[in-house]
Length: 100
Length: 500
Picture 1: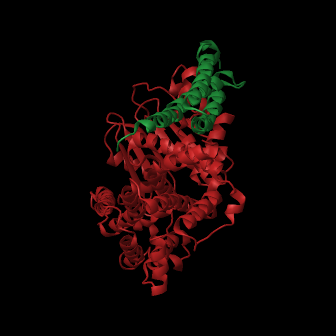
Picture 2: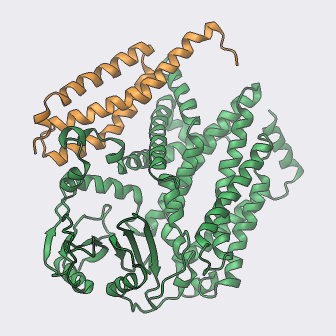
Picture 3: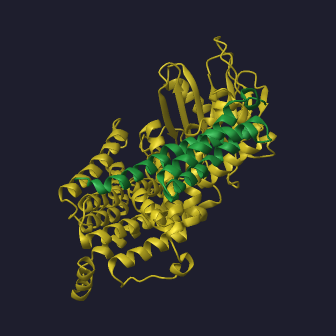
């Protein structure tokens, strides 16, 4: 099927949202899990399990947001930005995460 | 674009993409609610009730006599009401190859191999494709979660529509009502099943926590989280193993008469050999992880497992998904809600089709063909597997392989036929086939399985076994009802539905 030039922009937008939902959403869930695995006030094993069990809700919410956001750019900014913040907070203090 | 519109697009296309895979997962998951009853049905040797003669040490002796390779581990499970046989599994040390055998407790004889009810369970969570299949099913589960949430958002009048069914309305409207009805009835169940389903393999799907808290060492994590016991191999020959029955008696005493579940022996030929005995408690949603670890030679109690709270929460979620608690009433409820899930998928597909059939569009023939291939093909292929189990001689070494082939080839044949007809195939021929196959099985049992046919099982009040045949009869009759010759008036209304 031919893609008309007037259709190209919205199609790119949808493609960007699909990527944001799949990969951005997983990245956000990953960083969220890492963040809570470091900062929950529990012992190490419990931090990891509780954080991990919540990650699918985060991914689902991110996927919904990726399509609900006003624009694809906004979706990527919010999801990517949050993931970056949580990831930095989780991975920078290496000692803190490994505490028992 | 409004939120509702964008969610409608997400629901339509994000739902369509994985829908046939989700049908396979939900349909086989529904069957797997009764996997143990199917397992028994597929092993007629088990159906004679009898006294239990065999004990754990006899099972170990069989392994010693029949498997010569060095073992990494072996595990066994004593007979229960739903699984009245000893189960034995083992893994070889060098090749990593695994074996499985079941034994009739009355005679101690090894039962002939069959794919058994386990086939449906395995298809449900990994499509018989190992780790890769597990990831594919997990991703489908995420798509299901997103489809459920977006479906709720676009559903304007969720309460009012629940009481709306317009079977005589035009096709699309009626199917939409059906899709909503099944979706809303099953919503809490479907949400919980999709979520707990992906959560079971959370350690594979989401390694982030292990990465930051355990330096990416999953073994250390598993050990710490479950509170289990592990002893490194000493590379020295082990002493004479202590009788397993003595350890089982000790475990029962430790639990004030609690039941024994899985018994596993790790590196049995090494001096470091450990016997783990896990408690079985079907009254709990998640059977508590109270494993006792013993030295295999001296019988010394080495460790009493104390799982942390988070791990118990995980076990509870997994237990909720697997439905092994609370008896057959819970499992029938799971079956009903699982079927509501299948109904939701079928309704959704029909809405998609009806909406586009009127104005034409790409992909209609493909979607129709896939519908017949999967929605019609899978159930018929499952019936075909049961036929293969009954017709293939039980003592053939190739039986398991041939059962698998008959399932796969039958499904492939139906799929090929559906694709070749470019979506014009329709379900009626398949419904005929399903009716013949389903009604034929209980009749075949009358001829072939003197201890297991319907009259015998009902006669001795064995409803678990009888329910398999009774369900097959019901399925067969429903299919017949569907394909029955219609009166002219009915045919006209049907025609009006098909050609709006």
